[in-house]
Length: 290
Length: 156
Image (cartoon, rainbow over all chains, first blue to last red; front, side, top):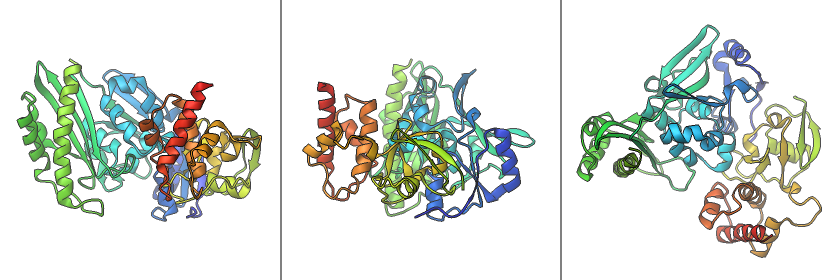
């Protein structure tokens, strides 16, 4: 399928990109890595009048660690983040998820900001951002605002970004000492979208869980936190019985979608298995990082 | 139309594609480099894989205008003297391919992968090629060919 006719703009600064967005509003689509948007164009599922290609905006790429946070420019390619020592050292959950995104050739072009702005509920990065309470920095002609992950994902492929706003940066909190992580997913084939995915992070202080974060992908139209399971875990010591109960609580009141890859019931069972598996791995990982 | 200049297989090329034209269509239609194959045209099959600035990319998911100023290598650029490169010879020797449709994408993906991972084992090669579909189901012999190439590269 060939792409439909579309106007094309290639700004080289954030200011120019924002001016173009203000001019075209929801008639425009922002083209980052293009690994989701170009298929949507080919399949006529997206029909923007204008493409605003931000690949030429150098200021949007880069990984920088500041006090307690790691800021990743929206145009940072996934393979660059995957190779980043800063990411590996400070946001281990993100580092665990990155190699699972698509295939190597997809990560050559795909970007951190692009995946999170596309907001596919089965994708890896939205679950990581939701689990870690990442912050989304967007800019419009009047300035900048910061949106917490809990308010970023609004629905299937839908975020709280306004049409005149550009996602410029995503900030992830630095993992505390004693934090162990695990990213689990079940897919038909490595690189395919997960049927169910799990981002898990556990922090242990003297053997007791002081912080627990679980976000499930593929279980709803947005990535979902398993708050009931997290509440159960905090203050307890890791054990098989505890993790079994956490898996029940994480999936008890979910109503996942059904499709040709799996029924709703199947997804619930897979999610429970992933929670058990992910918590076990995160707890082992946390002990190594004491 | 957007005027672009890029390097393809070591030669400087110019063109004026429409913005919506993919790099794959530009290579095939404007530069007559039809070795790059188009299967699904939406980033699933991997047949159109080429190397841009040293990284394997899907040329159906990149616009031609985005390749301006870049260094592109296609299957035609792997052995410019008309012979076969080490990987190509190893795949030939391993009877890697049947119909040949997926061949250019497999070879380009494997080329990029082996240059970054010369010591890759079978499992890593399987993973690296997992985004390339072969409908003749000849995967085993494809993996054998890449493994043989890695071995021959190391012996050099």
